[in-house]
Image (cartoon, rainbow, N blue to C red):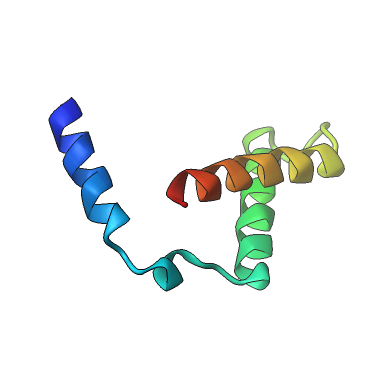
Amino acid sequence: MAKSKAVSTERNSKAPVASLTISAEERRRMIAESAYYRAERRGFTGGDPIEDWLTAEAEIEGRLNRVH
């Protein structure tokens, strides 16, 4: 399994950098969608929309940083 992961990483490293770049609007959409699903999982009750956004933002940033 580790071998296939290495192959996958190698394949991704050959991808053009431009294909990994996302616009600010796409980044915002990804964060909004993640925050929405967080609220949905708790039935849209309780919680804090700002905390949902900040948590979603950290999650998306982490995912995007792993890609680069």
